[in-house]
Length: 190
Image 1: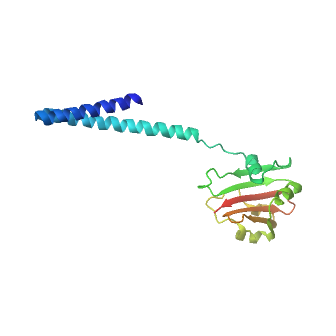
Image 2 (image 1 turned 90 degrees about the vertical axis):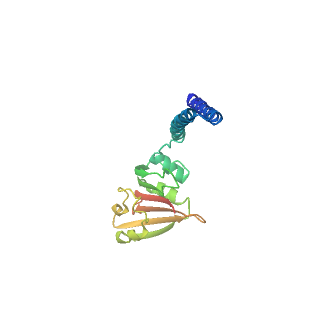
């Protein structure tokens, strides 16, 4: 990068010098030479800026490369504890950029005592729904919803657990099978 900057400085100084000489001597040849060198300076300066921007972008991208979390890492982070051995995350989608991505989506299989443990961590509102009522409780984020995320697969009767964080635009919702062994979860920030 330094040689390109040095070339820009030399070309600019040469162009200015030839312009001053042209003004003093009143010769058009010096003006044309100064103009040609100035145009060369603009080309080299443009190339230098391009190289600088692409190099900076690559360094920034490499330093901020976002590591995708596994389903277990997401679950552990959201519920602030290590899950029981009976937990199996079937599918997941993390919000990579919380400002751009709305939600965390999980599909999981678990045991009833793990489901109970998680649901006692916050004050969830519980409701028993039949499969036809599910659409009223689904997030209005169908464009972001993964194709595998489908609480209707839980059976005719589904338990819905909702937690709205006070003074925040965040909602957590579990859709759980009647036997508490399978669940769909989303955590959304609106």
